[in-house]
Length: 242
Image (cartoon, rainbow, N blue to C red; front, side):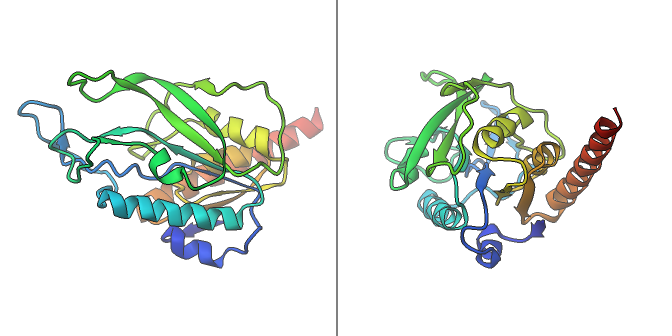
């Protein structure tokens, strides 16, 4: 089931305890006017709005997680990253010049922290080591756990953009779903984007609820998920005749 709208509004219509797992990656609130260094002023054309005052953003994320924990019987998998905030292009500054997800997640029942070693580097060093990882926080005890042998460090290359400026790889989503759900379970993604979580759910035989407020991204996700569902039906029919 796909919903076009703001996640905090749509979630009010989803019954508490009706979701088995949440998998999501919210906008990171990068607050960037331009990048490239020196005289380069490349505007972030094509990006979604991503420039809330940091305190407002963190309160919004807390409200989201509280709502997700009410809807979800299992774990909420929440992908985010450390953000340096020292550069003048960052609209809203913080005294310690660094925004860490733990700043707003500390009040929630964190079950595990996974380091996504995505490779590559992010940003100019300016005397700092380069960022090459993101974090996946598992919030709340899982309803189901399948021991897949994973450690707390996942080396998975980032995905190519598929009609979206920030996508995360299917392998990352697949690992979370396989270890925390059973076939037929329902997975929710309140920031559906281009629909990667829904595509993986179709392939793995999980039900999916996706929410996206941008009509263009919603259309991309809808097409990708419909194709993945059709492919899954074809594959099951082929297996049944073998």
